[in-house]
Image 1 (cartoon, rainbow, N blue to C red):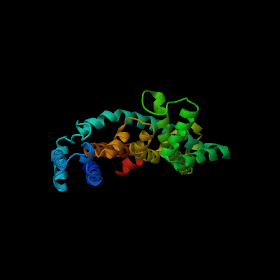
Image 2 (image 1 turned 90 degrees about the vertical axis):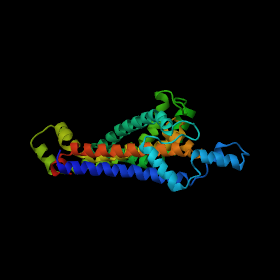
Image 3 (image 1 turned 120 degrees about the horizontal axis):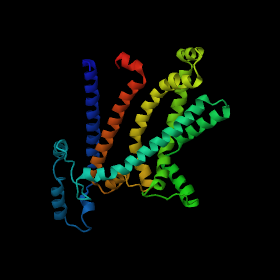
Image 4 (image 1 turned 60 degrees about the vertical axis):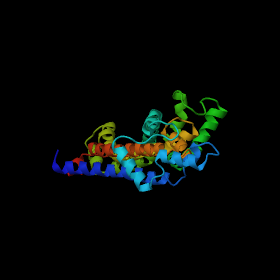
Length: 311
């Protein structure tokens, strides 16, 4: 690997670490502004001495800069604090919920890409004007529909009225389908609109006309000369959407009572469980940054021009 590539990789890594540090620092300050957790942890009628003792036990009686310094030093050692509510390491509580969120995110991303790629291809290549208009109309509707409203409507139709699927919770594919479809709608809409625009741009380029003039099969032209170039910006958008899935899952997991980190975050905020809130934000920020680093690498693989230019 060249020195320029090493410097570039080092710059990406430094930027990633700064992004995670910034997110965690902001949340650390914000959690201290939502109220004193000791008033929720102690029974009603607890005296001032009990409140003071609990605050001292949790380290909340120290000045905020000192609390922040202790948090950073402990985090560097892998200690992210003990949950005020669960009485266990906060990161352990978060990681227990990660498989549920990961399953939901993977299902939503896969479903969204499948629907979005199909709609984007139809919007760009379909011969009928009605088919193109329908595909793009559905994409626009998907982007304009709030996730919480769509989730509630899906529950009312498929769970309450038709009784085909459970209203919420976890337990199998039937429980996963509605929340995954709710998150997939926005993903499909964004992918469809970007892919259509990218396909139309690539189809008008000289190298595509040259490939057709050489007599190559339409399928060969589409796969090797059109889709490969058109998918590069879609890959970037997919990385962004994959990171945003973790944020969107907060609302969807709450609507469907899905036991992931999004629902855990809402419960931790309501209970002023600072260590769990900070651990969730740390995990989400780290995943978001890691996904974007992978997207940068994948973009270069799809578009050889970036490798040749050294970007």
